[in-house]
Length: 115
Image (cartoon, rainbow, N blue to C red; front, side, top):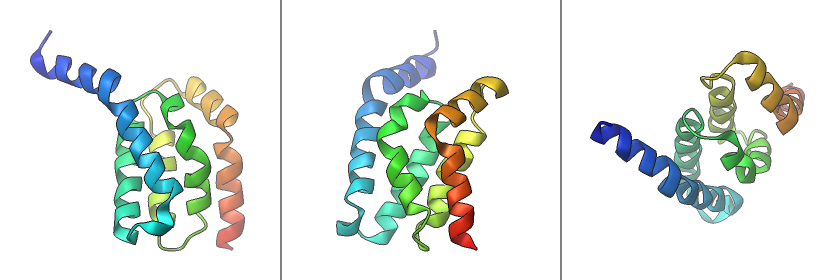
């Protein structure tokens, strides 16, 4: 196994869950952080979604949905949802996860809020 693959696996198993927990804390306490910090947090989450287990992000889902309604954070929240939709996995598995997670309702509700 190449060193880069070992490092990536180590990050995924041992470090990413802790990073996601920290990012979830930033989202859940976003009012005490600068807007650019929260925007950066959403950007990092969107990047991590593609190559990690989706269950790891359950603690962030409700807050991401809530942030879709805040004008200055909407783009970052939708970037997270876009990462989920673009996630590299079989489409039927992805649709099942999206349906079970409640993201469809969140996108529908966000569309109403944008009108």
